[in-house]
Length: 239
View (cartoon, rainbow, N blue to C red):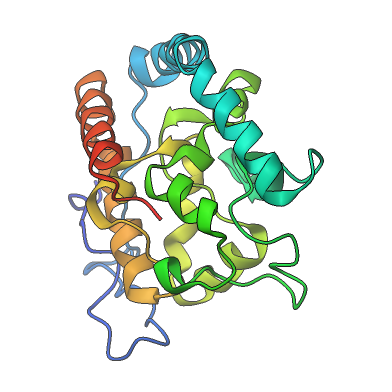
């Protein structure tokens, strides 16, 4: 017997902001909730990696003055060359952990009390310069080198930190389905929902957007997300 058509909703509506019930089993003898499988088209298997490499290399060349100016500005702001580039462990494709690169936008002691979600615009740990580079997503530019390394794609689900991924997965058991494709610098969830912080409702919406992306992965889908990302950057909608 063939499984039912893929359902876009991964869980019933929330009753509160602290937890999510497990997905309701699909009707029928299988009692399984079905989700979209990653596309196996030529673009998904080969073309996406090639296009990510080409775009990443092109952006590094074109934006090299911006990369250099941001590097110098952050180094002055942090009073340290060593603290300019921030590395952080993330969970990537097939649960492989990797180190993501970012320009530091918070004070060096931001996590002296342990890992914690950012509160977005109200987060007091973000420096004045950090607010500017986050607003225009300049802090994400070093991830172009993650793309060259093969840890990331230009477009895909945003990777979470291991400790946060585990916490979210408790409330959203299907959250790991996002790991079936390479994470991206930008993605459908980012241009659709923006920053969600620790809000589990936001992570549910993020998951649903990422599953739609996995289902609809194509050249056209990536081009639309890229265009929307440019719009978000120009309007300064990041944080």
